[in-house]
Image 1 (cartoon, rainbow, N blue to C red):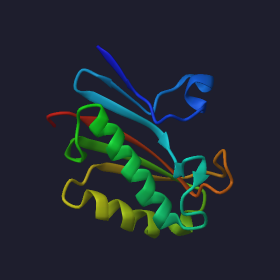
Image 2: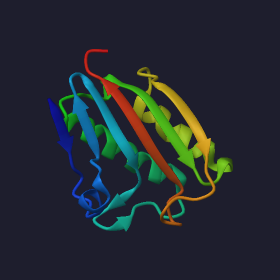
Image 3: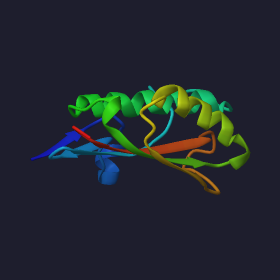
Image 4: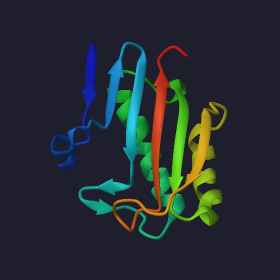
Length: 127
């Protein structure tokens, strides 16, 4: 069974993606930014953007029947690698002892120039 989780983004049907997809016990979360109600949360603040993104990711995983404890992988894309410690601090606050496998990757740009960070996540229910 394929379960789709939406964030309500107007881009989901246009681009053809879901915020998250669950198949069996596996949940994959699309690249997520700090957009809420059409606005960037934390413009210029990598820490706040990361916290906002992780809240959205956890909510999506919960909507798919999982929990924060099921997250096994995160991929963090930064437009400015000098901000990695801000993203890492937020990541550590959310995941603490869960400690999923994680990558910090530099990218030259994201779709919106106000976005400093975009994060993907994978979860395995019962992991």
